[in-house]
Image (cartoon, rainbow, N blue to C red; front, side):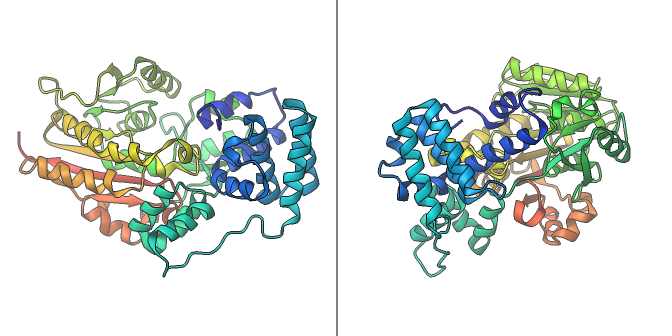
Length: 446
């Protein structure tokens, strides 16, 4: 992940295949991998302090072993310092040589002796923005540009938001109400040794404590009783509000979480067209539909930026666009390494093209829903504002405050005010879910 750009969810799942290690070791491996990735920029700041060789110039195996060792020393609650050092030395001897093992030992023991190794200066609100961004970058393990954007957008909320991205996220699943109930799913999971608790605001959500059990190995998963999905993503399909018998388009559908939720909300009636530009990703949708029993879904390969002017019209069109993914930092910590400011700045143009192309597929009077999993305004409100100017007289914002789950309005009364304007920004530190943006429009004329 650190050296070759692998995706954490795929690489970690492969490494933790059932049988490779027991449940306890799988749980620790997950904590170590995701903890190291999440704290990587903070770790490198500490490493630069105690290593004579700067992190970028270290041999890759040694760099990785030191990073993993520092996470255990400074942020793990279950690993004694001596064990963190000794295990790291063993790894260095195995994957490099005795000399490297001695270097790893010296660096980690120096860090272990320093009482302030894992502490960083607090924020100074009176300091210039550049200095505040540099400080937040180290404290919260964010690229400087990302820290600056959060400070510019959220002000005093930037620190709590960045801290929320460092917390271990809850694993939330959506009960497949076509095959079970929430209580039935909880009972089925309990029988497999998995603890559950209710979601924070979505009725069909359960939060799981896996205790090292891999999700694909659960009988409840294989039987299609649930789909792994955050509560923020569940809300998107409710805002789309498909009705029984509707024709629905999911324009950027893979891997099929929202597609299968729409199918569930429609009771298996009507027709859902799930599109993606890559045939391989369409296979993921088909697999999930088969597992969950969604028989009213068709898949179609299509570039989402190309308007379908002569194609069918849909009562509901959902556009969950490619985005910077910053709202998912807690679950996909490698975004810190791979998302650059230049890539983020290029996304709003692509997102507007996709949204505008999808608009042609909305039937007169139909609903268009736009969503992202980011917290950056340029990708969210900025795209919505540009779309409304472009589509003036054709689309209008549509309020959805009456559709918010009651518990969400209790958690954050302002969410209802936002939704009344036709858009909503969900934030991890306020709402206890992924960072998500949702906007809804109504097509008012042909």
